[in-house]
Length: 406
Image (cartoon, rainbow, N blue to C red; front, side, top):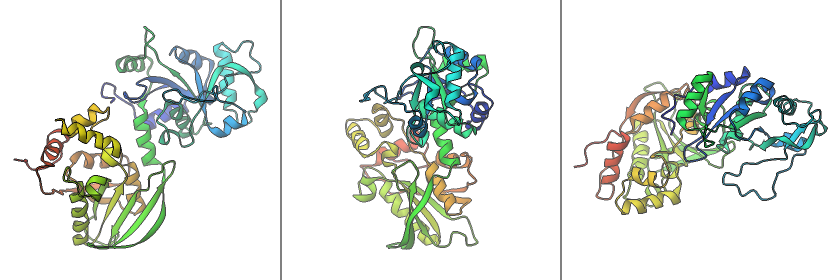
């Protein structure tokens, strides 16, 4: 959660990085729960490095695998069993350094790493700058500061090498959200979250491609099925398209449906997912055109095993939101960036969204995509004794527009 900090937009942060400024990047409270100073290696002046060292954490320089290989950098341990598997590499200094410890020497080392003509002989080892191996694909593969630093430098049009340093408070502990907000205000620094960087990339970069397509006859008529592949991810979202989406008339009906094995496949009565899936297909068929996008986001994004653990907690009295929180998750972990890309690939710009959740409608209109929800169409299933409390929680705690369950 990042509610105690007023965050900047990702474009604002990228512009700051391009100007050579330092920004603060925070991660999730259920991960490291820390803020890091971050800048681009290419812009790492002596003054900038001296400022970043004031964070009092470990000064590191994230880079991508190809540069790691070029510089013949090795992991500092053969078996990385650190909790978050931060990929520390051989620490280095530039060859011209006397000891390598000064801000000027570390600045020179870091800037040389970002030089397109850099070579292995430019450095001695061990040194005082710790390179970190970032995953190809950045924060879309790993939601860490390492990947965020490389992403931000690349997005700013600079060499994909970053600089980071964890920010500690006066007692030597991780700086709190309030500490970070105060620091940002005091030094006029932009501040963003990794969560927002992930969302921005999933919307602003083309990450999907059509993997296969075919006709699919169903009880509701003949659909076209399109399976997509997603860069850097193993998920395979599906679009079920009915009719001509470009024909004149009102915008097509669209259902963005997150996978639910228990509801969709084995007709569980604990939720309304299976009912909504079939209702949506029928409504789209009756309308004559529309799309159902099937997203692999089991259990509102927490996965099947965790969802079943949440069921067990609900058996002991918790509601669905309380159960997610007890397991350390937000009430809803889903991300619709990939789904939005699917809709854009299908050529849509205006849709009528089949949902009971007004927050989802607002999220679609605010994601910076040229895609507008012109109407929210309710999709209310029959209540039963097994899902009544689940639906009541949706209405009372998650804002879904559902009738009273009495």
